[in-house]
Image 1: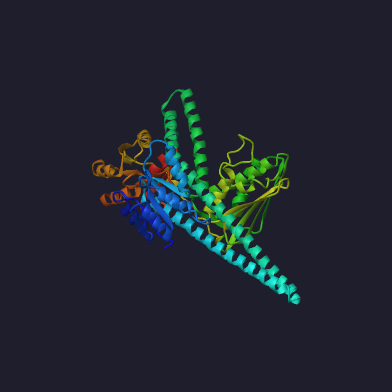
Image 2: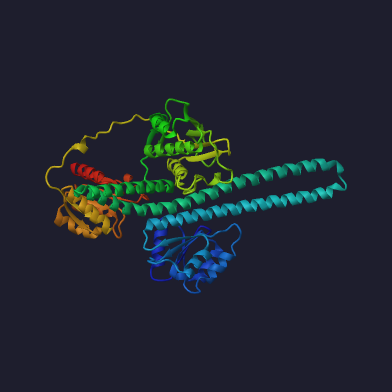
Length: 559
């Protein structure tokens, strides 16, 4: 009963459609006709509520607001509000409704079923944690009642049984110690929970923003390359190169945001952390400068984990640069790599590769150390840092299945530890790159299916410049209709499109032409597309450069 999903969507078939999506995960759903019925069911117990925004119009929200205000101290009931597509900013009254709803996640419609299911799962998880907190509070009340009862018994015995005073006092002291230890442990667990929830919410926000920027950056980046290629004016080509460099910086920033959001698709492979650090020794030494001594200590010749090697290198370089900035007058950076068992229940049981970065710098004040993994938070002067370095390190470690932790004392340096799950060593496989050098013979036709007009125009212009015959479609259904008439040698399709997404288009196209090679372009990272079973399908991540597009097309046509 306490894990039910309540649905308030009184208009049309919204409630039935929402219930159908939620039922796919085996959730128990209860449809409510209005807010009075909703509050009645809330009093009976529920895990989360899905409410359409129009159901709260006028005075309809009053019963719900009243119920929310009466919640007990442990409760912060989660609500998923399904809002309409807003072209303008919200009005003051609309913002007031969101404020009074409290723990609310707003999803703009239209939205796909996966987004709705994830939102429901997240809300239900938060509610279950609230139930756990309620249980802990009940236990605390019981302990407090037991202590009061024991103290009353002591007073009664004091008058007649002086010989037992010492024994009873000892028992009460022991009970008090146990209670204080439990309270302390509970406070530590609660602090970890709050920090985890905060980092998850911030990750969702930054990840969503970064995904949307990928399409915009791709259009600017490739068009700058096209201008540089077609123009004979040196000044124009210089300006185009400047624009391209700026977009590459923007692409790096979105990559950092996606890393923190923990939704970017990492290429998780076996990585020898010892070998990685040895290969990076020169670049780290150059980054540190001549006034800082760099020392490495390894417990073994090989220590393997599963991570994205490029992202792990970026995390290590970020930590080295942070250490350098903390040691303006020189010092020592010591990197130790070893194996340890999981230190506490917040990490899964097993062995971990622990990379420890210790500097002799200025340290971090105690009042800000809890915020150093937050995105955009920095202790550096304005203009000296983006505030994404340590948040990126945290995201990389979490994506690899581990975590990042920091210890620091002002004036005595800082130590950052990366805990990465240990794995068995593997033998590296040689990769053949000769296929990239092969040339595609004859004139090839490419069909581009992309719903974004600017991105589609950019792709068409780029492919034509590369010498291909290009046709285009603005959505999946139109692309499938053109498939028979255009008879392309290659299908290039965007992943996230309204109606049919890229995977749906590929599946339908394969029914018409089973041997058709496909390039799936995406600026989103919520789905690990690389693990989908799609034959002869190459993945092109946005934002990409013109050379990367040309190489991917050649490889796809070669097959």
